[in-house]
Length: 188
Image (cartoon, rainbow, N blue to C red; front, top):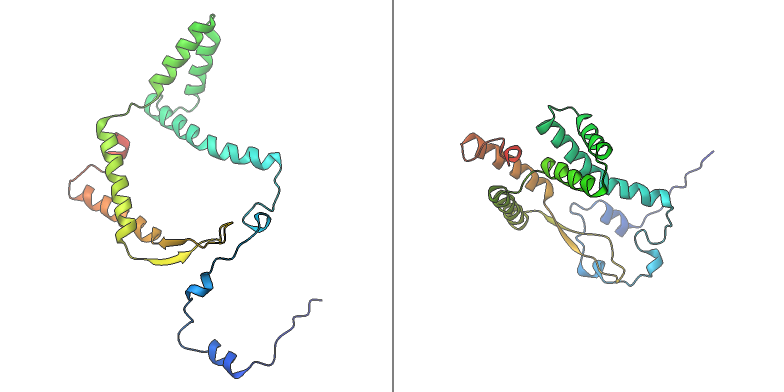
């Protein structure tokens, strides 16, 4: 049986601080740099096996490949997700010479890759500038992250959810007012 110890005596100053109307604001002394050792910061003190590394590698590589596979399947193969691996297998199986196989494989992959246009690059740069402007302009509280190995606490501007909502509202209003098509991302 688990027994929980409770503290029965509290001083008057502790009671007043617990029941005060406004919480105590943190001062600069609360965020003083305190050096830490390399072994007690972050995940450096934990050892991981090869399975964890392989899982992280799969998480980094698989999503972009799956996105490209689904995009290609829907734009060139009427959303048949088996058609792309079948075409790839046929190219690899039917080419007899290594140079011919390599050339046909590159031409097939090139035909599957969407081309970069000036309009798409301009849209991406405009979106990036808009997001940077939102980060600077939208109000939000400042919070401190995890202590670094040098003992510093870095401040972060916590306004991500507000920026997310503003981005979607602006996109919807721009599409509604005819500034751009609602399918601008898919078109470019």
